[in-house]
Image (cartoon, rainbow, N blue to C red; front, side):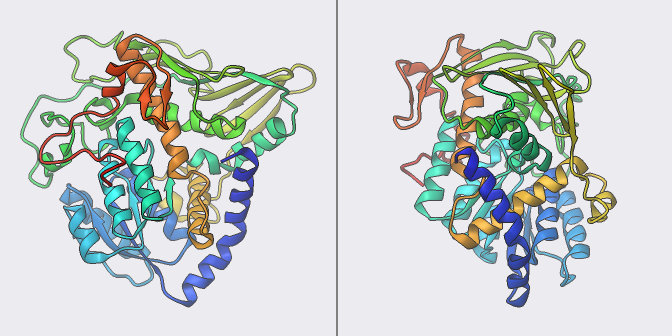
Length: 446
C-alpha cells in the first residue's frame, strides 16, 4: 500500500463508520468472536464494540479465569446483555459458532494457526502483531487470506494513529523534511523481571495447550498472562513487539517494501547466563533500502538518550528531523521554530475507556480508527490499511533481524522465492519445528 492510498483508506474508514454502524444496526449485529482473552485481546474487542453493533458469540482461551472475566465484561457491554459461550479449543469455537469476524489476541506463537483456520472457516480476521513467530508462518497466513478471499487486518495501528497521520501529512508528504535518507527506530524501555521457580501451573490454566506448537517450556509464575514476551519460545522479544510497530509506520510513510538486506548484532549482553529471561536485551539492526537506511536500536539497560522518547522513531531529512512516539511528535527544522503535536484523547467521548483500567488511552483512538478501516474494507471489498501482506513484510523483516543476529551475517531475503539468497542454512531457519501434534503450515498446505 503506497502512502497516498494509506491516507485515502484511513479517511474512507472514518467517513464510512457512521453508515456502517447504521446499516448493521438496521439489519443485525455482526457475529464476532475473540481468541485470546488477555490484555490486548479484550482491549481490541471493546474498541470494536465501540464502533459497530456486534454480538460476541464466543470467547476462547486456555485460562478459565480469563475466560470468565472476559465473559462477564462482554455481557455488561453488549446491548443484548448475553453472556457469550466460552471455549478452550478455538477449533470447537469456529465450528460451532461460525463467526463472521474473529479477533486473534493470543501470544505471538499462537497467531498463525487460529488465523488460518478462521479464514478457512469463512471469517474475516483482525490479528495482532507481529503476525507470526517465524517467516514461513507469515507466508502461509498471506496465502490463506488470498486463497479464501478474506479480509485480514493486522493490529499495526500506528498506521491509523491520528497524530502520526498528522505528522506524516505536515512534514513528510508536504516535503518540509526534504529527502529522507536516515531513520532511527528505538526502544530504551527497562528490562523485564525474572520469573519464579518452576512449579505446576494453576488448575485453571491448560499449560500444555498454552505452549502449543512452541518448544516445551516449564511453567513459571509470572510468564502468564503478561510477561510471555520475555520467553524466546513464545516471542521474538522487543524486536517482534516494539520494532515492528514503528518499522511498519516508517515503511508506510516512506513507501518502503522489502529491504535489500537485513543485518543485526546484539544478544543477551547484560543478563546473567542463568537468567530465566531468554530474549535479547541489546540489538542494533540495519534495514538496507539503498538510498534510505533504517536502523533499529534496542537497549533494555543503561540511561536512555532521550527520556521523553523511550520508544519511537526519528526521521532525518535535508531540512530537519521528525521525532515520533505513540504519545506525540516533534518537528525540529534546521531553520525556524520547533513544532509539536500530541496524541488524540477521546476519553470524554468514550468514558468507558477510563472505566476499563487496562485501556491504553493513547492508543484507543488509533485502534478504533483501525477497526473502522477493517469494517470499511470488508464492506468495500478492498484490502485494509494494515493488510496481512503489509503485516507480513514488517513482521518478517524483524524476524530476519533476529535471525541475522543469531547467525552473525547479513541476510538478503526474496519473498517470491521464499528464500534467503545464497544462504541455505538461513532459509531452513525461516520456519521452526512445531511440537507435536501441531503441524507447521506452509503456503502450499493452507
